[in-house]
Image (cartoon, rainbow, N blue to C red):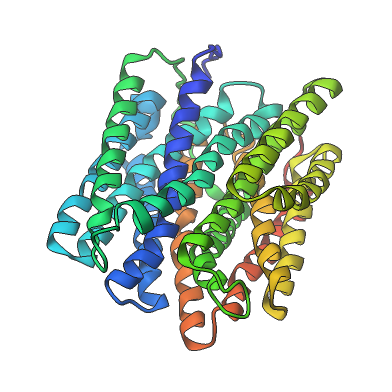
Length: 451
């Protein structure tokens, strides 16, 4: 395996990439209620948005895995840099399709655009996640991925604010019951993807290529931690996306939040802000930094988060939320291994969702919002635990993990069915089941992965 040298410019340019695909992924939470109104859809039909988007992860990863077995690993042949560029160009094609979708006023064409966008993100996930993990010490891979995912979550945190304002207010002033408000934002996203692709092409990045051997055949049964991890990614993404997708509809309920769509979108932002703060804190506390440096950086994150929440919401909300962030910080500080924080955070979300299903009023609003904070470190911890010691098989294993993102297609659809046939509140039993498995995986990983 060829050793790579970390350069100053590597991480900043990857951060830009993670931010952008986080922003676009979270825009689906705005699209669901908006297109639900435009095309007069029920909850199940509206959740097909997530099914088209996240279903493409499964299709794209399956194609990648099959082609890897027949022709050899594509990423290992072309390199991570050109894999990322390919993903960006595919994503740009997906967002550009929103223009004909608006002109034709076709829900099906919107779904096609989301499917192609998801294919682009599939390539990015397969390329960028392992690239971040392998560019440094394996013991701090989870910390690096948490940091990159923190900027991904910054995109998800501001997407409901900007996206909600663009779609529900600014571009909708003169286009009621029309999808016209989506043209300008998604054409802008197309331009941004093309710009980042050009940037990646021009900048020289460290090269990573594994030395392959005919004797090193990939058999998934050799890696039980990968098998359990694939199911964990399925459950985690499904749970996280389910909550975010149903959040606006849930907060609009009279006996829960009684909010307008515009107001609810701000709380969706707070849900994703929790992921952002938790991932930054995870990057700090799971790294090998000196104690005082950890505390200093953690204080910066907390102060920055406090200011952001105060600006977007209010001082009272920021003060209250800070207590929860401090508790999460304490867990992350004392959880020296990713298995510990994953187990505790999964168990926390199980308990919060029990309250969400059984109670009503303002306490339920906060219980569902806080699940975002405890979702924070799950993706990076699951991913790094799953690819531990896989060597040259890392890209192929990553494609299987990305394939499991199809949980974001299936669980929200199941949640929509329950919401239509029972009620929205009881539909949160779906992510609850996901967190049961994640708690189990966290405990199981103590035996499977030695760090």
